[in-house]
Structures are given as structure tokens and as C-alpha cells.
Image (cartoon, rainbow, N blue to C red; front, side, top):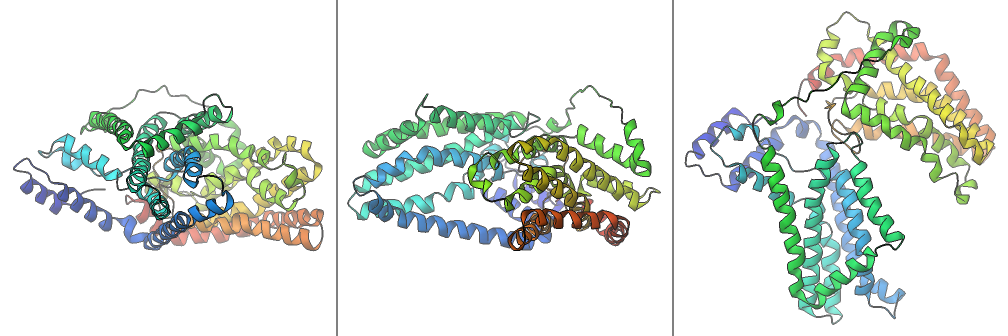
Length: 512
């Protein structure tokens, strides 16, 4: 976010003495946040996030208060503290994963500051220090502090319990700075989620197969700090070490011209002549395919197709779900529509970087939207063909996938295109795809209702009152109706895009 001219003038005057106090950084952050277009346009989303945060706070408080009596009643012969310590490894592992996918790393607009007489080390210290005030760092305290109070009430040594809570908090901060390193490694790979999968999956596998019992190691380490408070120095030293590692990495990258260094890459051209079979939508399909292949975020989304295609393996081999055939339609919608979901929810934001130029050309908007529809429809057909081997688990699964594929082509493609007319968030194509919420607004959350919940409700009701086959038939008929009335639906959707054309141009011209 660009720091305003007035703030820069104020900074120049205040840094003549070459001293920059923390309060000045906080003042800049405050003005940057509340003056941004993101805050002004996403007030409802921010209010929702506040309520979500309050929900987790209350939940963790209730957990912390009720945990001791529940454990004491359920396991009367065991020490509740020992039981909690035995599960800390899984707690910390889950914390690492949740932070990677959901924690937004602290950033600030440092470029304007780099032209001023401010020490780079002071800027880096502020950025790293800011991460210590993350909601993820304080959330566990709402559970562990009440649990510690319950321990003290029930006769546990006060000093030992206090150091036990401090140890948990220090380890939480260790995970915070460890996440910095994992994030930096993930940004250097095409599969941005690969480092966290290898790290977390590797630790879990080693512990599960009892090669190294991390459960016992973590439990014994925390118990040792509880018994010998001086051992708290060990996790503190680890925390300091990780802080220094991150400090060194960030300081090396904190240069004004660091973002100007271009990487030399070999350009790979691909033959897209086959797209000419799609008529006047072919040029736009070629642009979309090139955009997907040449940019990091959409290219990473393609790799998620593998995960979506294998999604059925979480359900179909499980005997429990064999008695829940109404779930087959839900899995079928997801498996055959994973590309439709990932790509379609950001139409036309994928083109936000050059949307103004695109709209200034002498092209028909309907051709532009037709290429998006064709690309999504073709992906559904391909994914359905690739999912045919699921017939190994039963013919009903293949029938449900076919009905879901037809429904995706006839209904959900149009739902995605219609939802795109409400998109107002710009997308950076060079960011990672996995759990990246940049460019995500209320539209992406609300569209899940007609996209997933509606077909599941229709199929579930048909299955409950009639039969499985009738449920598949209803989904298929709805899909066929959407295909038959495709031209009329596209005309209505095109009109909606034309009405929103200039609003989108204005929104995409701003930095969110």
C-alpha cells in the first residue's frame, strides 16, 4: 500500500535525527489499514472475521475451563496434566499447518522508508516483532491459562504451572517464526504447499510408525520444564535462534532494487491449434491457457486438480460411506468440477491486470465469456473420464459422477459466470495458489451455496423420497435444461457483465 505524501513529509521531518521510534511505524500501519480500499470495501467481511475470532476465543476459554474436570472424570486414575502433555505434539503440528494456510505474514510498505535515513535493521525488527502479536499466538492462551488456573486451584505448584504456561507460549512463538521459514521455502517452489506437506507429513509419519516418538519427546520436554523451571531457557534459546535466522533472511532482501531483479527464463511455446475447433471463442481460450501455464497462481491451481481427482478415495473405500449413497453426488460434483471451482470463482479477476486494456478492444463480451464457459465445460468432461476408474467401488458411483458432470456443465458453469459479474478483487498472478485469499471476497464464500449445497439438497431430497436412481435423473435433467437454454442464459449473464463493466474496471485499477 502506498504511503501518502503527507505521511512521507512527516517522516522526513521526524527522521532528520536518524531515529525512528516504534510508535511511528504503528501510526503508519494504522493509517495504511484504514485508508485502504480493502478496508472500505470489505467492512462486512471484517465484521464477520471479528465475530469468528470471538467465537474461537469463547470456544477456547470454555475448553480451558472444562478440560480439567472432564479429564478427571473420564480418566480418574491419570493426571490431567500428563494427558494434556501427551497430546501437545499433535497440537503443535496442527498449529504449524493452520498457520501456513491461514496466518497472514506481517508486511508493511517498506519501499518508501528505504529512501529515508532509517536503519534497515529497525524496519526488520518491527516486521518480526509485529508477528508476535498475531491472533494465532494468543489464541492458545485462552485455553492454557484457564487450564493452568484449574491446576493451581486443585493443588498444583504455582511456580511450576506458570512456567508450564510460559513454555507453551514460547513454543507457540517458535512455531510462529518457523512458519516464516516454511513460507519462504514454499514461495520458491511451484507446488507451494509441498514444503508444509513434507514437513508436517514427515513428522506425523515418523511418529505414527514409531521411528521416533515425538509424542513422548514433546511430552517429556514440557514435563521437564514443569519440574525444573530453569529448563525454560532451552526453548527461549531456540526462539532467539529462529528470530535471528529470519532477521538475517529479511535484512538481505530489504533493498530498494530487490524487486527489480529479473529472472532469465526459457520461453516454452505450445501448439494451441486444436482450440480453433471452438470457433470465435478460440483466441480467448488460447489466452486463458497461456495465462494458466505461464503464471504461478493459476498454474499451481492446475496441480490441485490431482488432489480433487483423488478426493473420492477419502470416501469410497470407507465402508461407512457405502451406506450413505447420497454423498456420492456431493463427491461427484467436487471431483468433476474441481477445475470449474478453482478457475471459475475468479472470473474475470484472472484478467484484472489488463482488464482495462481488454475492455477497450473491439471484441464481443459474449465471446469472452463463451471461452470461459467452454474451458470449464471441457474440464468437467475430462475429469469425468479420468474418474471412471471409481466404478471399481460400484456402478452407483459412476452413475452419480455422470449426473454430477452433466449438472456441472448445465448449471454450475452458469452459476460461476454469473457470480463473476460481482467480482471486484484484483488478483496477483505471481502469488501461490494454496489457501491464498488474495482476491477473495464475499462472492467466493457465498457462491458455495448454489454451487455445492443446492445440488446436494436436490439429490438428497430425491433420494430420500424416491430412490438413488431418481436423484441422479433429477440432477441430469437439470443439467440438460441448462445446456438447452445455454444461449439464453449466456445472454442474461452477458447483460449483467455489461452493466458491471465500468465498476469492475474501476475496482481492478486499484490495489486491494
